[in-house]
Amino acid sequence: MTTPLAGRVALVTGSGRGIGREIALKLAAAGASVVVNDLDKDVAEQTAADIAAAGGKATACAGSVTDPGFAQRFVDTATDTYGGLHVVVNNAGYTWDTVVQKMTDEQWDDILDVHLKAPFRILRAAQPVISAAVKAERAAGVPRVTRKVVNISSVAGTAGNAGQINYSSAKAGVTGLTRTLAKEWGRYDVTVNCVAFGLIRTRLTEAPADGDASIDVDGRQIKVGVNPDLLARLETGIPLGRAGTPAEAAGAVYLFCQPESDYVSGQVVVCGGGFDG
Ligand SMILES: NC(=O)c1ccc[n+]([C@@H]2O[C@H](COP(=O)([O-])OP(=O)(O)OC[C@H]3O[C@@H](n4cnc5c(N)ncnc54)[C@H](O)[C@@H]3O)[C@@H](O)[C@H]2O)c1
Image (cartoon, rainbow, N blue to C red; front, side, top):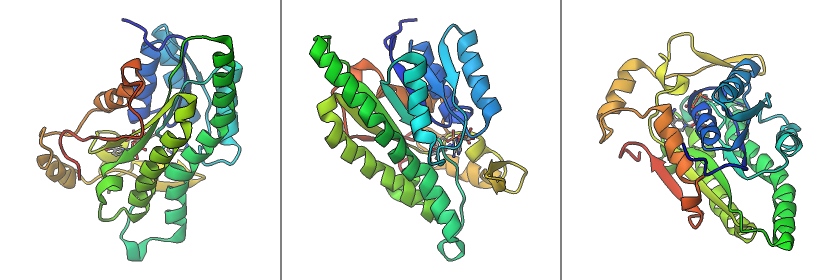
């Protein structure tokens, strides 16, 4: 396997499971050193261990991306452990759905915090590191290094989705954050893009909504998952006829991390098997 990302250091939030885990494995297989994050320490450590077992480099930085001190700790882990920062993938998140008239302020705030405020804080914390590194690289006359940010959105953000006013609003915000930062960070040779997923089979979508699958956020159990009948109906509306796999989702993110996309920035690409909401 070629290693186009050799020498690069990547941060991936929510990479203990699902799509994030596949992104971390893929970046590591391409040669990047990966800082794996997850709310749940055991799964974050498992992803890092699996990368190491496959001959790659990874370290875990567990904790909630919504903790006010998290962003700095995450960026510091990259620089302290691997001496740099080249790729940031903002992937962590969960859903907490209901119709507008039943949605509480807490539901709204928590989902905006995890999907929108956390990426903002992480990118704000990354700016001084990136700016200083680029300045040093230019002074040393080394070949241009294009750094990469990939933010994760959803077709709920690009097209709206009934029952997800908090999530749709947060994910729509992610596209604004992406396009704005692409304009601010072009001067640092950073591309900033966004991948909006359709239906990907993970814990978030696969488990029955009336079953036991839940996420523990600050001691609260929030149910995740989609009713199997609804899932089957959703799949019939996908031109490719099926939900995507986490590995396929990671492939779309990888497009924006590889050197071939060095002149693509500020874009929102839907990875939905032809379904775009
Ligand atoms: N699965 C889909 O169909 C789909 C569709 C559109 C968008 N997405 C987005 O893709 C991303 C990944 O979702 P997934 O389907 O892989 O879900 P998943 O539940 O399988 O994995 C998400 C991971 O993020 C972690 N996480 C959640 N909140 C966190 C926090 N505050 N701090 C740190 N880690 C946290 C979870 O513990 C989990 O391991 C999310 O942003 C999601 O909104 C998924």
